[in-house]
Length: 437
Image (tube, rainbow, N blue to C red):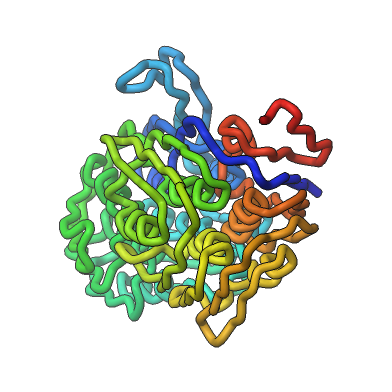
């Protein structure tokens, strides 16, 4: 099993380029199923979840190739950036098998596009991080309202329809994947669809913009009411994946944990307003210039209270990393998780490093400690893995983190990026940081 070894006490300094967003890339890959032809996708991150999703598309009959500065796949600006070409001309299968879907919940995103284009789909109920109930009820309810006939059989969702028809669909709570799936299903439906209390995340907005570029008619992106007028067909496009706001936020918090100064490139600061505000409140100095952020820590961290909320609130995907900062901050802080009911599994592992945390319902009450101490810890999910890396950067001594396969689902070469910025971190032991001051 892969393991990361981190020796704390080394401040960060340098430049890190943020990768394309996993949570934007996966629905965009799913959207390629809606049109016949070849798509070119730029800045697709090299992550395990992306590899899983492209394997799923191949299972459905898509032909996927990678390119790097070739004539077949030049970057629209520089001509050098790598990309994926996805040819969905000859889809031959409508079944998404358990072996692939069990690895991540985002696989459910093929359900809407398959029903919309092929008239049927058989998709295994999904897996992924065990951070709480994330039911697919919204997806199924919406498809039924659009005329699909659904069955749950042998762990699979089976859906069939002629041409879907528009409907008015209300989400009890905003659902990112639910909004994305039903938006993709509705673009080829007959008539008008209205999604009320829809998710407003940047990843939802850019998916909608891509669909419009393909020929869809979507209004209200970025608001809680999205209106779609169905069209007969769509065309393939070239598209660039937006920067990963969660990766950017994680590296900003790494500066808070380790100290020092980092310049982050390929960032959209507008997607991080709630995060930047809270990090400034806890003592970080952050300045923005176009698509770059400069983050500095001078002095001690201050405690702040956090409540996770749907966008534009503080993201649940940065809750664990923020906790790794607050365990070092002076005073008392409270972190309240409102999105997932089981997203505090990193707490016991942070306690092994010396953190003082008490759980009361959906809130973690944190009393800052003078010093964390390295220990052996176990990663339990994707963002918990990142929080342990951050805590290890701050801890006295060496931290051994097992289960970092979770980390590879959402962070592209995170240990290499941090090491290049001065961290003492390596994979699979053999830690040697003699080159560092």
